[in-house]
Length: 596
Image (cartoon, rainbow, N blue to C red; front, side, top):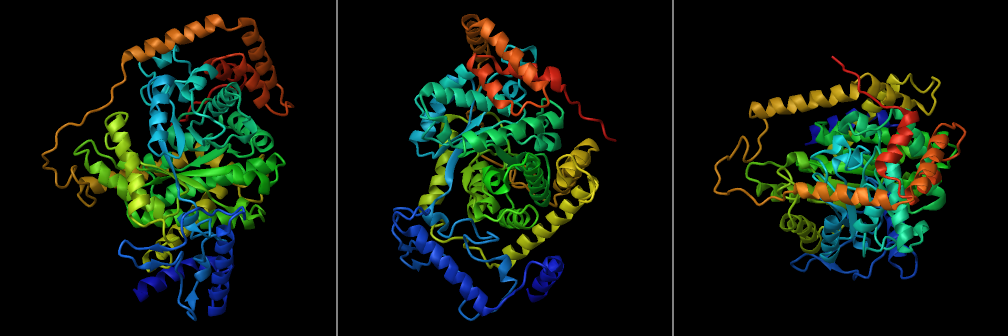
């Protein structure tokens, strides 16, 4: 153990400019700062992140528990600054001094299928069963900016998510769900801006004050070029729209997070934990550069960035990944981008258990995988969590399997004691070594990305990390790196060096087929019928004028912000396909280059 620990510490000598040696006095001072933060947060009326739960917490056997644990009094722990205390820079141990005692993670189940009415029923079931927020899954035509009656949408409407063609669909989707009171996450990137405008208009039609809306829009276009491949336009027009959204939300919807930087899809495509960590944070740095290039104050816009990670099945590696992510982000935001306010240094993230880890063979095993992955996310300090259903490798989840997925989180929260102590694995030799190693690997990847863009000394339209990301997209570097990692893992499976229960190990089973949810072709027919009726009833002249105004604004490089004119088109009941197609007349399309 000593030899392994020495080697780990040796690897990270590059951080000596930042990390020092923590003597007993420093450790004691840090504990005192944590205690002050904890006490302040628990004081009624303080505005801190306290809760009504009693202070005293015990194990199931009645043993009393402290809110956090650290080195014993008088101990000297080399490099303890890397670990620190919850609620304090570099936030390795979490953003809040109270941990989950003060604010448990949000249970945010991802759902969407068929039409808006069907999905509304599922949302109400989730909320009535104890879900704390909603997360919208859109179908493939919506994700690609097509209306449901487009020829490219044939056979795909409502199959992998909900179909949304206009603001009227968004109204139905959230019927009887007060948008001013619930947080909503929307997983969509290419057409994210017009979909967000539909969400705002649906809230307006509910009579809500849109300035108080809270939630998250994915919007992350970099990961589309890197992994998921759901873009509409070339990168530069998308970045223009994202910059407009950042400005608009900062001024008009300050609690809503306009960007959720997504590593989930990067990992699902075959990336390693280190690649997911590095590619995702690099994308985040790119969006920070975008905000700065717009003249925005980093301390104001950075809190509007959130992250979305995969919780894979390698339990301790995932915990270390989450802890390293917070630490890296805090350091870069402070030292590279000049953020001097804590909230601007925070990395807040949502986690989803790994869809790619689920198997069609012996699908009930997926309940176990999901529980383990969810626990890794919780022990890594996730701020919100989605647990996959056991049947999602076969179809969209049934109501029964969705309830099991929800109950998985509730069992973790209510029965296991994981909410009692902040960062209970902090200080573990193994977890800390993994955290440090992932941090070092990520830093090497950042250096490579920045180098592809010409380095910090070159001229950049937005910034050096952004230039490196765009270069890596253009030359296929990200795609090839992920493909190589996926290939190596598949080889390990085929050689039985890696084992998956039910696939290449313990394959005998008494379980049969599970019930799956099937989307009827009648859904597509009905969606198209309703869409045609809405086109008939709307004011065609108002739609034509709104789309013409939109095209003129898109063609005007001096236009300060496109969001208001997109909102006008949405209010006129222009469809998603019409809005995206109008912008595409100027922005053009993007075709990925073949790379041999």
